[in-house]
Image (cartoon, rainbow over the protein chains, first blue to last red):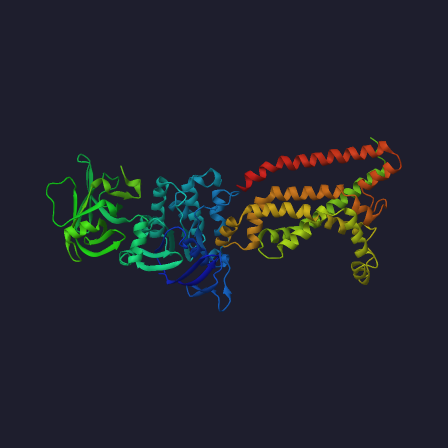
Length: 362
Length: 227
C-alpha cells in the first residue's frame, strides 16, 4: 500500500509518506497525539486529507490532484476500533453478519463458522453487546471486520480500553488471525510489547511525522526512534522455545537461538514457542562471566550499538538470533570501557522475565 | 356527553387532517432532519431557524402570510391557478399545506435529536463494513431512533389536532371541509352552548394528556436504547 498524505487540523499537521508491505502486520507505534489514529482514519476514508494520494492493490483510493475519493464503504478496508462499536440493537450473530451480508457471495472469502471458531465466540451468538465483557466485544468486533474479507485490516489500539489481564487474553487471538488468515493488517498502538508480539515490521510516528519505517531491530538504532521508544518504556520482546520444566527448582528453561535462558515456571508445553518481555532497565551488563552470583541468566553477546538518550545509555547487544537493548548509566559505560564490538554478558534475573501474553504464567 | 353529528364530523375531520399532515411530514421531515443531524454546512443555522419559526410566531401571522401567498393574488396562488388548480384558502388542501408548515418543527426537532444521538461512531463502523448510507440509515439509524421517531409522530399529530389560529385564518369555518374540533369548540362557546363545548374540550384535554403521558413514559427508554 502506498500512502502519501497531508492532513491539517487547527494546530496539528500529519505528513506521512510511506509504502507498506502487502502482507503480514505493520505496527504503527508512537505516543498519544502522534497522529496514529488520524492516519488510520485517513486510510479508511473516514477523514479526508488536504492533499495526497492513497493506493491499495493498484487501486487509487484517494488522489487530491485527480479528485478521486473512494467512499468508505467501497474501500474494502476493515477497522477494529478501540471502542468496539458493536451495534447495540443487534445480537452477536447479526453484528458478525452485518458486513458479511453486504458482500456478494463470491467475495465472501472467509466462512462464518471458521471465524466464529477462530475467535471462540460461538457461545455468544445470541447475546446482545451490552451483555458482553470488554474482551468479548473486541473479539466480536474483530470477527465482524474479518468477515467482510477486507483487503486491509486496520486495528486502532484495539486493546487500549481493556485491562492488562484482558489485553493478554486477546493478544493470542490477534496472533492467530495473523497466522491463519492472509489479510494484511496495520496495528496501531503506543505499547511496543503488543506490536513486537505481533510483528517486527514497524512504522514510528511522532507529532504527525514519520520517524522511521522498517524492521524494529533496524529502526531502533535511529536516535529519535530510540529516544521515543525509551520514553514510552522500552521492553525487549524475545521469542523463545520452551525446552525444560524444573518445577522443583522453580524455573522453566527455554532457548533463544543458541543460548539457554531460565525463567519463572511457565504454563507451556515443551517445544512450544513463547514470547517473553524483559524491560531494558532490568538487564545488567558485565564484561566477564560472573561465577558466584544468584542471577541465573548470563547471555553472552556482542555490542552492536551504543546510544545516548538523555543521561541514560542504551546498549544494543546481539546475543545471536536476537537483540537485547540494555539501559545503563553513562558512568557504568565509562567505567566498564564498553564499546562497539565488545563482548559482554547480559545479566537477567529470572523473575524479571515475563511471558507475553501473561496468560502463560503459572 | 353532548356530541351532535356536527361535532362528530369535526372530530373525523380533525383526525383526517392530523393523519394526512403527520404522514406528509414524516416523508418530508425525515430527510431534512437527517441532513440537519449530519451537516457541517454554514446554512444549517439558517435552515434550523426557519424550521423553528412556527414555534415562536403567532399563528395569526403565519395564517396571514399563507392567505396572502396562497390566495388568487399571491405567488403560490398564481402558480396553482396556472396549473388549473383552485385557490387553496378555505379548502381542506389549503389546511393541509398550512398545517404541514405549522407543525414542521414538531416533526423535525425530535427526529434530528434522535438521529444525532445515534452518533457518528456507529455510522463510521457501518461504512467500514461496506454498508451504503441508505443501508446504514434503515438498518442502524432507524432501529436506534425509533423512540424519537415515535415521539415526533405523536407530537406532530397532537399539535395538528390542537391548532386553531392558522385554521381559522386559512381554512375559515366550513363544516366538513375546514371545521375541525378546535373551531367547533369556538363556535359552541360563541353560541353559549357551554355543555357541548365542555364535552369536546374535555375530550381534547384527556386525549392530549394521555398522549403526553405516553411520550414521557417512553422517554427513559430512549436513553437506554441509545447506549
